[in-house]
Length: 165
Image (cartoon, rainbow, N blue to C red):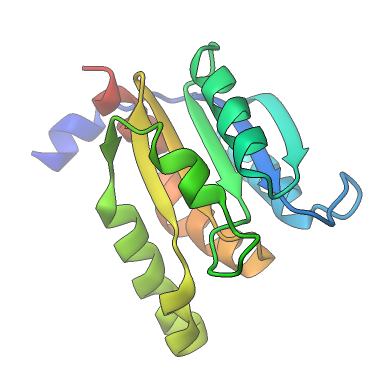
C-alpha cells in the first residue's frame, strides 16, 4: 500500500527554509545552506529563505504568512532544544492541523544511533497545516544532514501529496 501511495508523490515541492538563530548570518548558516542544497539537488524548488531570531511571535507570524503563500513545505532548523531561547516548537505547534509524531520519534531514534542519549533533548517536530508540510529540526549541521537524508528527502513529495488528498 505504501508503494502505491508513493507513486503519487510530487517530484518537485516548493519549499521555504527558515533558520532560527540568534547568532547566524547568511554567511555562517551552514545548516540552512545544507537544506537548500539538498532540496535543489533532489528536484525541489526554493521559494524563500530567512534567518529569524529565537522570538516566538516572529517565528509564529512568519510561518503563518508562509502558510498563506504558495509554498508547499516549510523546513525550519534551529530552536528545537530545551534551552529558554528554544521556542520553535511552541511557535509552530499551535499552527498545525495535524502532527506527524513519527517524524520526531524517528529523528530521535536515528540521532540516538549517532550521538547517544543526548538525542532525547531534541524536540524535532513535523506536521501539516493548510495542506502544507512543516518540518522542524535541530540547527546543527549533523542533525540537518541526518534529517534531510533519512527522513525529509525520501518522503517530502509523498507528505505533501497526502496532506492535500
